[in-house]
Image (cartoon, rainbow, N blue to C red):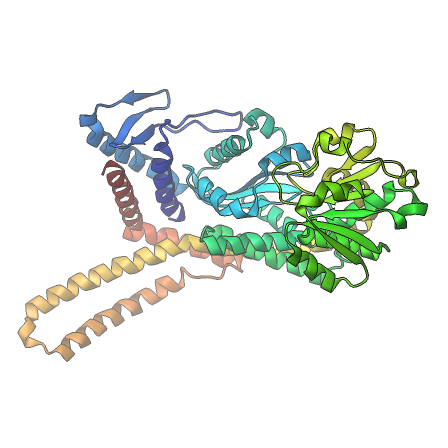
Length: 539
């Protein structure tokens, strides 16, 4: 049913992936199932290799057509297994809780590249849908996988390939969750329960952005789209129905707190502040500096427009704009440097910091670099400089622990809301099981109606009927079919809110599938798609 449709999509992806010239490899892991029983690759002239998992057999050009037929037969054999197996929702990723920033920055995917990354993931053999959530604290990939073990393996290998991190090293920091656990995790992420700063609100905006980007690119599938939208609902409810966000610090405010903790208290107010990057994070840094009594800040940004907008909004602090070309000269005149740009290469290395003048002893004689960007804007080599101290997002835990306990109690209230939203999503997904049966039953009945109507018209004769009479007979046959189908279709529809009703509906679905042999139609559609794909690759 749903899995069968999913298989067709995966098979199309398999052919496309195979075209990259390497046969599918069965890399076994301790928690993976046996590798696929066959593999193939598509060359310019068509399917050129077909073989078992122990090795591929080279075919001559004259055997390419036979190879294509063999591939179809292999797919048909595998179809039964996939049709019985429901596709899984999975999340594979790492976060501030499982991996250091050095690893997270290698895996970080800029927002502009989310659609490309999702497209590459969907082209993997066993991945039907995909979405990427990449922030300074996490890099998580949400997928609908036709096969749990094979899907996980393919995504892990993709992550290794794009980051340059060996799979063996990557596995030490990855977490993998399936179905209900994966959905609950996303809901908790959206609610701020999995954030470094418990209850922070920025992550909800980032989850919303995944949906917006997916809608623009058309890359989100039905399951992932609904899951993310329900996660947004859960995040909103948690913040409106509990007090988890009251007094909560964000990454930006924690960065300000950390900087002030490291400065000598008598001179915190006189320290010269520099903020590099005027995006959302930079704006929050400036806002929290103003709240702490800072009267002046220099902001380095590529364009002046964003800085002007911040200046209009924040009247209690003097904001001085400097272009990016003056970044290092501005750092020479600053005691504390906050960095939060999207640059994929470090803005400050040891050679840049070595030429900066030493800061006053009044502020400790050490220049502070507070880097809340991922990938990092300040190279780790800067930490070795005698008159510089570097702090990144992982160092914010020192600040976060101070007000975490109070919100842990509020998090327990949030879990009850998340459980409600989780049940609602799972009920919706369960109800999708019946959709293929409804379509197939309707199609089956319409074919019979059309066939019998044609026989009737042939017996009566075209000349014996007026246009009005033919229309009346057609409407009569349609009405009879609709009346007969009304009862069965009603027993295939439910909102999923009642588990007993859902169980009954699924039982009815299986009974109808058996009675009318509806699986046969599903397999025919699947075979047609496979033939079309193989034919396309051979043309």
